[in-house]
Amino acid sequence: MESTGIIPRLEVSYPDDVLHSYQYCGQDVVLTRKKHILDICSFIRDQCAMNHLMFLCAVDNSRRKEAIGKNEYERFEVVYQFYSMTTKHSIRIRAQVPDDDCSIESITSLWPGADCLERECFDLMGIHFSSHPDLRRILMPEDWKGHPLRKEYPLRGIGEWAGYETLKEKSLELRTFDYRSSQKGNE
Image 1 (tube, rainbow, N blue to C red):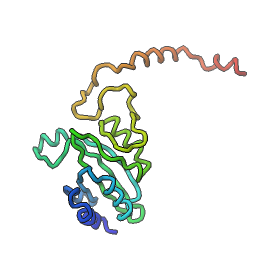
Image 2: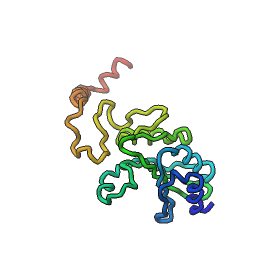
Image 3: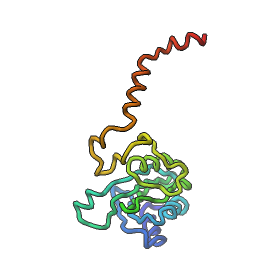
């Protein structure tokens, strides 16, 4: 299948969801609503032979929206990059996620490898993935406040992390640990 044949098929199958489409550096890019993202991704996989999820990430468009003054962009986007092993083509799907409803359907039922990628987006951007099997922080500590990749998050963080003192104490304890002396009783 030619790469350029995917966009018209998506536009016919999901006319209310495809907001904009274009090619950039020979790659198809589709801007969509989030409502039917699971159906769109299923269509991409089953009907267009896009059998590999290359990556999934999130983008905070708050400054871009202010700069260009257009309402075609929501504050957040979840970006999916798919690749076809058989046709050697790729497509990028940019699903729009509004600030007031910062959630989107999980695609882990289609691509189990999306599990950690969705958890990372949840952790760093605060996007909730509905029906995700284990949605919890993956990079930041469980008691971390906020989402560090959002544009409004301060560069130096929000005060001191609550678990910092405990971590420092544990670090000092471990400095005095001697591996060899702890093994002598096991010989």
